[in-house]
Length: 294
Image 1 (tube, rainbow, N blue to C red):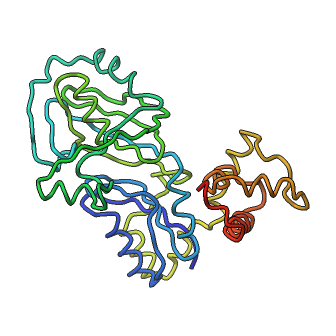
Image 2: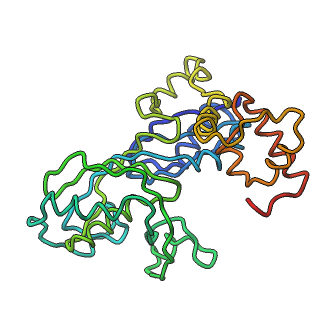
């Protein structure tokens, strides 16, 4: 069975555990998620089944929206509430105006240093393995894109923000860096992913919903077909007006497409052609050996 499930991941479960649950309930061998959520985090976790697993890396390129609660005055080694407290500070003097001013520098293209407790690799080993062994290593800064960052609630020492960002953004790092900018430290106390690409939290199904659907024999009705996922890229293409010609019978356009990185193809998919064109292009690029720009 091919398609995508929009799962509302509960707190305390790893993303891998959700994938394992889907495999067990659906008896589908090929299952993968499109963007890890930390165990403490909740919300949208797209889970791809069958042929849809080929779209995982491209789904991960889409923007995400998070609702995050940050606690000032507490710093931890993991940058979230589940880590070991490394510092405490009186944050009672922090004002909303100071927070608003500090947030300005966190919008747009920013540089983040990944937390030690992350899957980023250092000399072939995930950072979290080194962190658990008590080893701290220097990490290189990474570019992240923050499309919007708005305050939703302020009850000192707790700040609630809504963030829309690009791939590879660490909300934990954002919380930690904001605390450093204000001179009082901070840690992420709660996190919910409310959107991942076209998947919204209000349409997500809980693990309990999925189990019930599997028992009732109607779980397949919860699947998003692969073509529906591509609507997001079709909309982007229409907005940017980048590939307005039909590819049918136009070799010059084909040559242009074949020179594009795969990520660009899926970000600017030809409208109205659906999944078949995406995989035709993918196959052509592989057969032409055009992999350098990926």
